[in-house]
Length: 193
Image 1 (tube, rainbow, N blue to C red):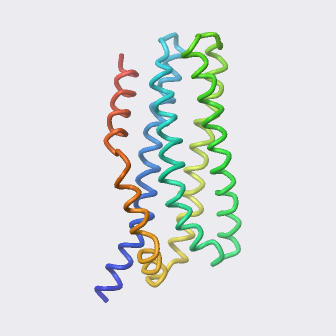
Image 2: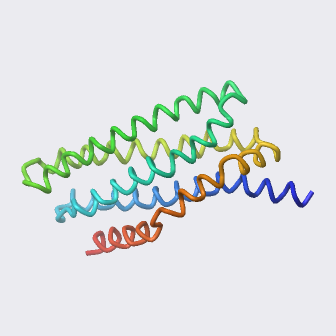
Image 3: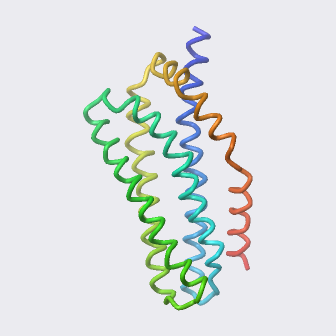
């Protein structure tokens, strides 16, 4: 019984990491949103800092978060017809988010280089990015993760832990998690000033 609990905890760690990522990304999205509101009220824009936050979200998602989700989703994809449809939608959203991130960063980069793009267009792109990211996180948290938790048993978590967790754990150890905290502090400071 104790061994099954240990294995279950190893597998469940995947969902815990993904949930924590969503919380951290949501914090950054909220700070970007508050920064946008300040810009709308006439405060100066720290586009470089917002671009860094968006790059961080996109970079982290593409290199670490989505691959970990892929491990989980690949395992559970064919265990339920309803879950398969949700996962297919999620995979499409991952591709769309990558494009959206590039689309929001491009005008910011242009503006940082020569300042020629109107702020209204940049804000419009930022708001679209925020909306798409929030909807995606809510979709995974509200629909996919609960279905996986309901469907999974101790053997599933054990198999996932044995087959994939060591690979993904090593991948996460290479990521500088302190950068998230620094970026979050910088964004909070920008909003406060």
